[in-house]
Image 1 (tube, rainbow, N blue to C red):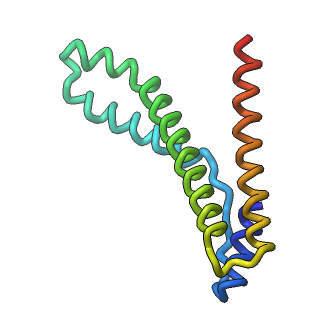
Image 2 (image 1 turned 60 degrees about the vertical axis):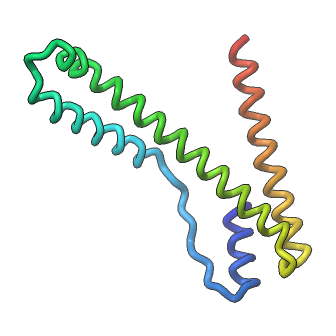
Length: 126
């Protein structure tokens, strides 16, 4: 829905629509792997210290935590940007009613998805 809305907005304003691509989790995995490798590289110089040995064994777990944090942060930023764009469309006096209606539907869809995720979490915790 949002890529289609972006295309309509681009056509309405005379701009060329850029293709949107779906984000993958590869970037977060590479971030975690790179960070894990960096941690290992740094700790190689401190192998004699007990805290370095402990961190050396924890490096894969730290890498996983960093990957999860990057994925979460990207999801939060994507949601914020999508909502901001849709609200800007709704407030734009130059946007026609069809585009505004599409923006309202997209906002409703985002809210429904958020509610569905919350319900899954609640049902899964029982």
